[in-house]
Length: 83
Image 1 (cartoon, one colour):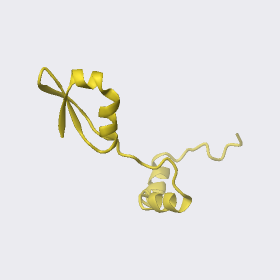
Image 2 (tube, helix red, strand yellow; image 1 turned 90 degrees about the vertical axis):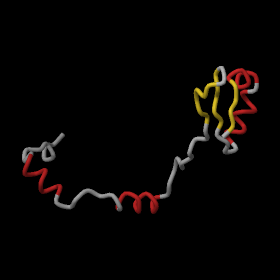
Image 3 (cartoon, helix red, strand yellow; image 1 turned 90 degrees about the horizontal axis):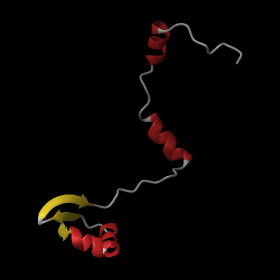
Image 4 (spheres, rainbow, N blue to C red; image 1 turned 30 degrees about the vertical axis):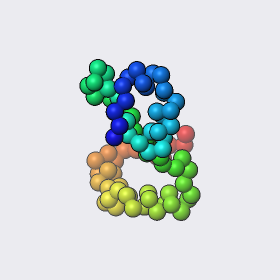
């Protein structure tokens, strides 16, 4: 981790952000005191293929008995209404 004074951040924002983008974590200091931390964001895909999605979702399915329990708790539904 590297300390960067707030004045340097103001004067060299682009260069510091490029360092962060490259993976470096930077601590911003004000009057020599650590105040904030800039670190790279974790990236995650915005799109995943169907097979990956199904694999991830099926691994976290609700308890199979949940449907039965919910029907007992709230037997009246609107599922059968024509609208």
